[in-house]
View 1 (cartoon, rainbow, N blue to C red):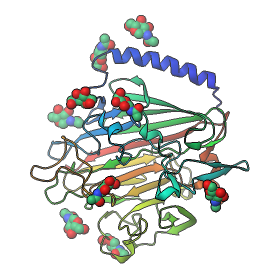
View 2: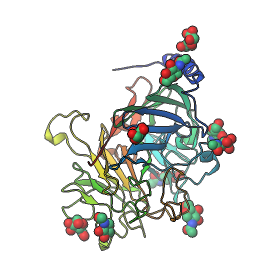
View 3: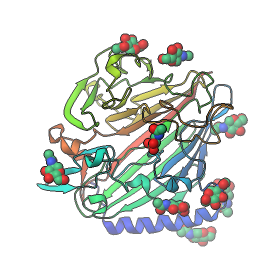
View 4: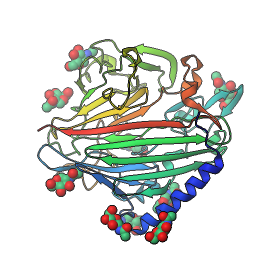
Length: 396
Ligand SMILES: *[C@@H]1O[C@H](CO)[C@@H](O)[C@H](O)[C@H]1NC(C)=O
Ligand SMILES: *[C@@H]1O[C@H](CO)[C@@H](O)[C@H](O)[C@H]1NC(C)=O
Ligand SMILES: *[C@@H]1O[C@H](CO)[C@@H](O)[C@H](O)[C@H]1NC(C)=O
Ligand SMILES: *[C@@H]1O[C@H](CO)[C@@H](O)[C@H](O)[C@H]1NC(C)=O
Ligand SMILES: *[C@@H]1O[C@H](CO)[C@@H](O)[C@H](O)[C@H]1NC(C)=O
Ligand SMILES: *[C@@H]1O[C@H](CO)[C@@H](O)[C@H](O)[C@H]1NC(C)=O
Ligand SMILES: *[C@@H]1O[C@H](CO)[C@@H](O)[C@H](O)[C@H]1NC(C)=O
Ligand SMILES: *[C@@H]1O[C@H](CO)[C@@H](O)[C@H](O)[C@H]1NC(C)=O
Ligand SMILES: *[C@@H]1O[C@H](CO)[C@@H](O)[C@H](O)[C@H]1NC(C)=O
């Protein structure tokens, strides 16, 4: 078992901070005029901000060699704090992603109550009203192809027990974006579940046929099951089958996100009165024998015919959330790097897809799922770790 004392973590933090000061002194490596930090490798360039350790831009050249910015965000890093209504744009939800039923959970017979922030106080979403993706992380290291952010989440913040220290590292290699998230519970047992809440539009909103992402083709080859939820998207304890050809079947064959939008079953599929997806698909692949997530094939792929850009998502996580942006209504702006002349410069309903690599949502309230080892962490335990690789290719 890997044990890391608080002292070790703090001195590590100090050392990396000193290194970071040195590297940001290199003017080519500090934030740009928009307050963003650039990292790149052949065929890929990303911009990141301390706010939520968020990705704000991701540039890939499309099938015609045109550079496309395929994630949502704001033009200026300072705008994220100003626009408090932003929907977790590209950040790291923490310390516990997705919803916590009744804003409470039990660890070792003690009932904890965290701050509710959704559905008139019925649940806690993405770590509470001041979750990690509403806070500025510290840039502790930055090179031309990698950036590391850190956050210290104090004991009691948003009602969670114990301090958590986390490092989020993003690295670029040719045509690939790598994510590594590590978190340590230093003082008490606490739930930890992180993710990357990146919004995608692989057309960079430049497709003359549609401002939406409904024509993106999605494949979830290991996701024959999903987490059952109630009308406000709280897991109800059931695991549901994604029967072949049903609206939630993305495993048997790739299909467009919009393929089943006229099917009556899709109405209410993402909560009461919601048409589309906001769904936690399980990733089941242990039955095929031992696997290495790095080489076992992607848990998800998404592709756009218009730009020819496709992303394959490799991860060690065992669930995958898909949100089809039914909640967008044209109030969120697109960036200056996106869009098409003559069309409103906003995100329309269904204008994006959110993909979240994660663990089974709200498993802290479903002990029979037996996810405790993956979701509850205490001092002396192995750290929480999430790894993923987003690999890009372009149709020639
Ligand atoms: C920072 O840079 C200076 C000058 O290059 C070097 O002497 C020093 O050791 C560096 N400090 C760290 C923490 O890397
Ligand atoms: C600054 O960073 C650039 C790009 O990585 C590098 O080429 C250059 O050598 C660095 N300069 C110093 C003084 O470290
Ligand atoms: C970004 O916002 C900051 C703070 O409002 C401002 O100082 C800066 O000029 C802006 N950058 C650009 C390129 O407009
Ligand atoms: C896109 O292609 C142009 C021209 O070859 C190149 O300068 C640019 O770096 C490429 N962009 C990316 C993200 O690779
Ligand atoms: C829900 O939370 C309230 C207090 O916030 C608590 O009294 C109650 O026991 C919780 N209910 C369930 C079913 O956990
Ligand atoms: C985050 O940092 C930016 C830039 O320094 C600042 O404008 C903003 O107020 C900070 N936001 C929060 C929530 O601390
Ligand atoms: C885009 O999606 C719409 C609605 O699902 C469909 O009618 C149309 O054929 C699709 N276009 C392409 C190019 O796939
Ligand atoms: C969903 O779309 C797929 C692909 O077009 C189709 O095979 C399937 O029958 C549709 N399912 C429903 C319930 O409409
Ligand atoms: C659109 O959504 C935003 C953010 O959720 C909300 O504040 C606004 O009232 C909505 N506008 C309309 C016209 O529904």
